[in-house]
Length: 185
Image 1: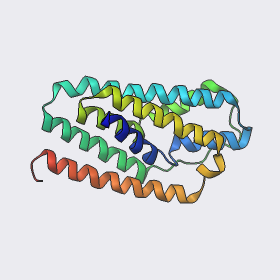
Image 2: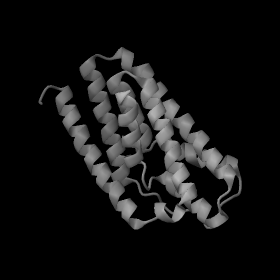
Image 3: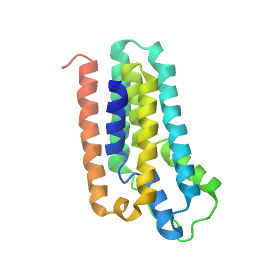
Image 4: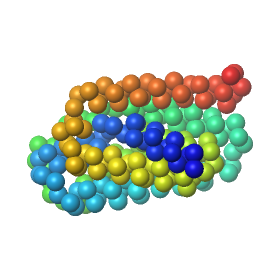
């Protein structure tokens, strides 16, 4: 159960002002609160969270304890790097009304975002993919729900700065975890 709570909390922090959340917020600001956008976002978040946990479940049994910890450190480093380096970019001026197009955009953004890297890291490090996947899916769905219900809040510049701070913390945690895995700490 610890993996669930840890993943949920980490996802909620790392997913603030993420690319997928800002895409849903931008779409909601332009088109209004369409229930299909919320349903699509939640479904995609659940699917990508489950995919990240499933990937962790495939890898974790093949590795020794220290190797799992080192792989988790690499995934945490990727999550931190994504939070620091990748900006959400601009939303299209005239976004399409297609929920299928939104689903493709969300899948593309979520498969390589900090949240899914965190889910993978926890699934590998703890060798408990189900709690990590549940925490990631619920957290990711909650983040997109916030973007749909309060798009003005999600687009605040303060959240982008907070995201960069979380990215720096993730990089520090990745460094400490990696050093611990190779026996320096």
